Picture 1 (cartoon, each protein chain N blue to C red):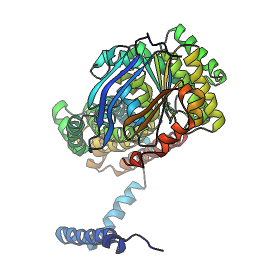
Picture 2: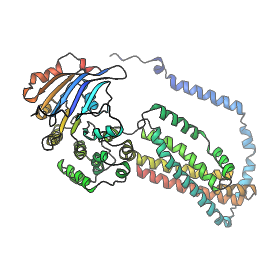
Picture 3: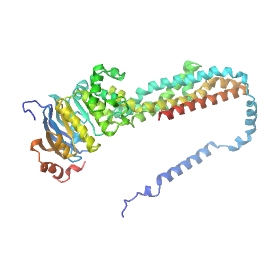
Picture 4: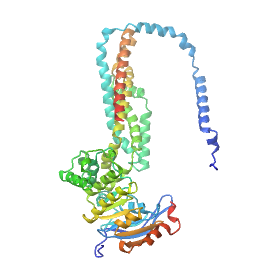
Length: 260
Length: 261
């Protein structure tokens, strides 16, 4: 599935993160992700999955090392440059992070905010092409009929799919999904994972997802990375992953991953 | 079954009883200090009755002359609330700790806003009457500053209670902080903001009736004139008019605020 000649779209070099209270979040992470991969990160709660993911778009500041997005360092970027890089890295959250009081359309259009000056977006002066983009994204996730409804009238699963639509219109190179299915029922979880899969296969976006479910990880990932206590302990292409390996990631190494 | 230990303070409700004792001590101390004479209030009750008797015959013919200053009072409250709100929105955003993460900046502006809020409205009115002269202009300035202080605090505390998730989401789209304010913050707080603005307007209407007393325009000035001329029959009309206006505005604004919930 991966093409070895491609340059990595995400390049994590010697990244460590120590929290202000002294806890080690991440220790010397090295990780290269190629365009078009669907990487699933697994590990116990507190293993550093979210910390790693939030370091990739710099919602977290790393203590050491660099993260390169398509060859450019996001860890050193400032202001306009940082915003440009973030625009290329969409994110889907466990709690959806939509503005519940706003309409579905406005939430989806928020995905385009990186392309507009604030005065223009505030007045709702989005280009017709971008509105079409939003409608198309909603059609993809099967929610076009909800376009003018307030988000708080939707179910959790529908809300997460609105968040997916927001990531669609952002037109990123990379989609990060931080426990995207953790608050959804199994059926809806599959719908959301299918959305991510289609972004990956049809639109060629690189996807990195944190998942708790081993079954979903095996079903959707092209590569599995295991984290334990802030270190990468496992990294294999999906065809080489065995159930024993996965069980090891969760069970081995006593309970060091549980503190924090 | 083994329960975790309660602290001594928890077991004997130290906070509650401690607070009660402090309150009692303060009450007794301030009464001794002021030497309040409740007897005088009862002795002078006949004076109050005499005044009341005169006011029982309102001079209805003076009613039309009440309309103009009454409108002026409402206008003062309206303009003061609006200007105060316009200043308070950016101020509250700078003071909110989930928007501006630099504690030095939020701390500094909060000290300034606290100082502004501690200025009593009557003191402000006296100041502005001295600066810009007698009339509604002084009243508007007073109410602007007064509303600013109050609304800023209500607003930034409101902003700090919102869900911060959408704020992060805007950052990950590559949006600016200003876009975050417009798309993630204001939609979450707007209905509560409107409720606070209406509430401030209610307070401002009541405050502006008193401000006129210091020469800051509006119905209060009329009230003061009638009292100083001992025209209690006119005073009665003015007080009735104020009562009706305040009741009407409180009612309307309460109705609107309930609909917002």
